[in-house]
Every structure is written in C-alpha cells, then in structure tokens.
Amino acid sequence: MNNFGIAIHGGAGTLLPSEFTPEKEVQYKTALQEALNAGYNTLQKNGSALDAVEIAVKHLEDCPLFNAGKGSVYNHQGKHEMDASIMCGATLKAGAVTMLRKIKNPIALARAVMDKSEHVFLCGDGAEQFAQLMNIELVDESHFDTELRYTQWQKAKDETGSFLDHNIKLGDEKKFGTVGAVALDAEGNLAAATSTGGMTNKKFGRIGDSPIIGAGTYANNYTCAISCTGHGELFIRSVVAYDISALMEYKKLTLAEACHEVVMKKLVAIQGEGGLIAIDKMGNIQMPFNSTGMYRAMKKSNGDGLVAIFK
Ligand code: ASP
Image (tube, rainbow, N blue to C red):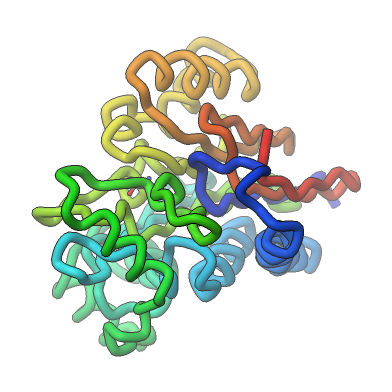
C-alpha cells in the first residue's frame, strides 16, 4: 500500500489562546479529531480520497461548532445560505453548489453534482430540485439555527460589512469557521472539499470562494489538493487554490514553497486574511495561515499527526 494522508480545517481567523478556556480548546480539538478519524479510517480501508474528504466534511457540517451545515452563520436577512464544492484530482471533475437553504449536508450535494449531473456548479432552488431527484436529505431551514450564530448576527447586522465569523467579538463564544478536507489515497489520487455558511451578515446573494473551483477548492493528481478558508473576496481575486497548483506545475515549486508564496506573500499584500490546507501527490502536507489561528488537523500513514488551533 502506498503512502496516504488527510488534512482538515475548521476555519481561520483571529484565534488567540487567551480567548479559549482549556475546556473549549478540548471541545474543538475533539471535534476536529473525530472528523479527521472518519476520513483517515476511510483511507485506511482502501477508500478513495474523494470518499475520505466527503466523509470528513460531513462530520464537520454536522457539528454546530463550525460555520458549515448546522452552525452556518446568518446573512443580512437572517437566513442561512450555504456553499460547498468538491474536486477529484484524478479526473479533474468537480461539483459545486451555492445559495442552499435546505440541504443538510451541502458537500453531499456537491458530490452528486460532480458524479451524477452534466454540470459543475448549481445554485439555489435549482440545486435543491436536483437534490430531491438525487434523494439527498433536505431539512427545514430552522435546522440550521443556532443561538451562537444568532447572537453573532445581532452584533453584526447594523454594521455595513460582512464578517469572518471567527472575527466577531463575542466574549467567550466567538470563533468558528468554514470547513474543508484534502486527501491522498493509497492509489495515489488526490481530492479536495470545502463547505461553508459564508460570512456573517453577507448581503445581496454574496458568494465567497468556497464553492468556486480554483479559488477555494482545487485538486489535480499532477500537483496537489487544496481547501481554503478566509476572506473569500480576496481568495477569489487571488485564485488561491489553482495558483498553488499552477506554481507547482509550471514553476516546479514544492508544495511548501507554493503555499508560502500565495498565503504569506500574495494574500498578505492585499490583506487577504486566512489560510488553507494542502497535500501533494507524495503525501506532503502544508497548513499555512496568515491569521492568528486556524482550526486544523492532519494524519498520515507514516504516523505523523497533528491537531492544532494556534500558531
Ligand atoms: N471563505 C469563506 C467565505 O468567504 C469564509 C470562511 O472561510 O470562513 O465565504
């Protein structure tokens, strides 16, 4: 069996040790560990990288601690609008969905778009009609309501901007985020998946980087698999996920060099706060971020592993 591995994230932002009680830190790390294990066990049983990233992201979507699926933030109208995408590095096939209000696991719908439709990107009501045809679980919009996100929105709704949920100051209860996973399976295939509720108080049908292939998500067996988190507008403008792959493909940079170039230089130059997780075809993993923290975890078949929040 070849080398395999998986990395996941639960969002990046202003995450400082001083704002975490030991109990809270354990709570987040346990949630990350559970999602990581679900993905890793899939790989260990010879499952595909695609299945591993989908399963890990589903776990994170079902956990109210993170801004995806249950736990998604509120937009300016007090609604939840979720986005997700997934990409297969072997075939360069991709599926993406945006403006979802009723899909329990947006990543499952993105996968169905990739596997079972002739399209890449579906939005809103149309995407939800397709979900019904595919027997993907729909839930009442109230499923996504959580007190924490409601309080965050109350704080943000009279402001003009939209906010990374982890940057809203709410005392003890503030830092969560978009989720994602990248994996390399024992067959040498790469995959990436990202899911989000977007930014708190977003307006006018705003869509971030997470469902945009090449911006928030990208996978190519020839180079790497990437899932991003951060201020989506800046990640779209920097075409972050594809840029890392392109630096590896055309300039022959290593994964670490390409990640450094994009996250620590290019994004920083335009105040693009955030980070990403990345894995290459050799199983090297990078998890760079230019914010103070990023919920992240990784596990490799060689025994390497990490679950961390701060620098
Ligand atoms: N990138 C996401 C967006 O802009 C937000 C996040 O990563 O938390 O929608």
